[in-house]
Image (cartoon, rainbow, N blue to C red; front, side):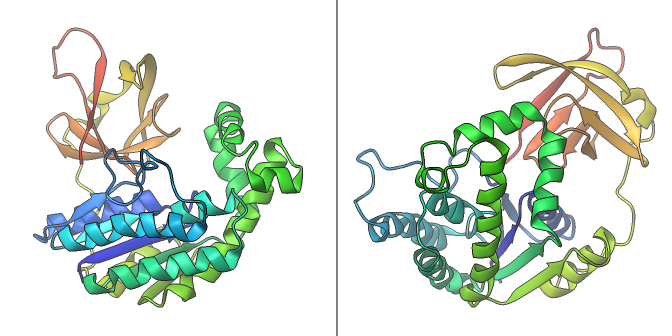
Length: 301
């Protein structure tokens, strides 16, 4: 096994799961690379070519498959790849109202390309997609919703349905979920379906670890000796803006608010450096006695 694909509905925990898998394998001495879904220079989720795509979905699929074949040819010992095999292509094609059969045909081509890596699929299935989407949008806020709607307007799905605003988002993600559910078995890869209507995250992680042959980990994550010293208000530079954020303790660990996701958990790495859960960033706190309260966010890929 040299490739693990992590897929699921938005908010199901794909990034959190992919990061956890990579960190656990690394901790247990297995070289592993996690490729975040929005990572710069992503090997397969690439921008459009300079000359654009050809006029058919077959042209689009051929160009996308070229990136997958290059990735397979150069892949390392073990890679965890989230959202790239299903979420991104479904999103690209369905917003433009591509038929489900065309989307599934492309997904099968991806599966055929990665079989050489003895790929496995972990699918995080939400119990209620509409409820899940409402929850994630409530967490991310109205500004995020308004920005998201602009990426759908004018595209074929929006034009055909005549919808706009949050109604457009809900209709799209209902349709997306239907195609996603059909695509998982269509891939024909060894697959674990994690049904989130039962159990909880500790149980789901045990199932995932067993499926992938990862030694189970029952110990709680390590924490620095003086967790309370990091609590407070900080300044941080994020996406060309200076923001104020806060750090607090919740459930025995640090939580960051005001940047990244709301209530973003921090995972201790070493010293004054933490990893942002579900993000490929290090969060570096000022050393004790350092003037000012400024955090550093460093890309860690």
